[in-house]
Length: 88
Image (tube, rainbow, N blue to C red; front, side, top):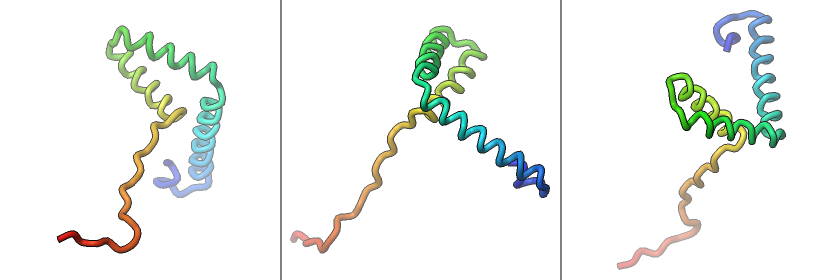
């Protein structure tokens, strides 16, 4: 972000603007089912013929799809609660 490097009001404003733009984009993508389906069809079409540019576009589309519908995170391993009994 620009505010991390530059020390000005304008840099801070631009950083906030960029974050708000991404939040708006995420909301739009998550609520628009038609757009989601269009992106899926485009991804299928591009994966059939992978060129240098097409593979880059597919990578971007996959990242957008992950933002829209993130994969579930695995649950962390937990220690059992209480006292354990050692077996001999």
